[in-house]
Image 1 (cartoon, rainbow, N blue to C red):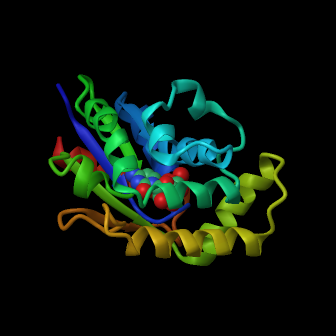
Image 2 (image 1 turned 90 degrees about the vertical axis):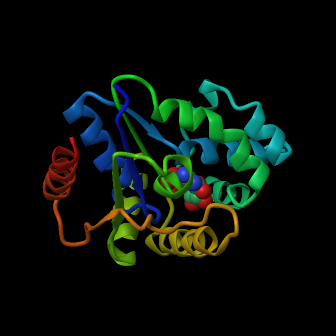
Length: 201
Ligand code: C5P
């Protein structure tokens, strides 16, 4: 039976960590939809047209190892403002969401546009400082050299662009549960998310 968990929120708020934990806990498939925009943005940096880059995206494009760098993040957020790019990625996300056995999708417009009928909607946030600290650590652990200030600038610029755009802007669905993870450990945030899914099942 299809069961969809939609997780939205600003950059580096913990959506991916919570999404992966929920998918393990409930045995659901997980899709980090930001990867679709990152892989598209990365291809555009190599000279492709954004809409063609989105339309011809392949599974192996999602596995490039520099998808989390600030340059690719910025390119992702720029292509994500183009309605035809979003349209090209829509059917894949909707089909993933309704697969038998349950699905967790995280992104910016999952609860509002991709899966307005999702059984569970979470809107995950954290303070700017906490988000920058987490993303900076993730990048450093992966051997990248971006400074904390560069990471903070990237997050703030993307959140502003993602929230202000006309096409599927970043905003909570009216029926989303809001989860501020600034003061939470990963275990606490995951426990709160699991409890919300259990309530809806
Ligand atoms: O989630 P992540 O930070 O990896 O997403 C990268 C960028 O992709 C975001 O800044 C946003 O512009 C875009 N995005 C989007 N809609 C989604 C997921 C990501 O517009 N569902």
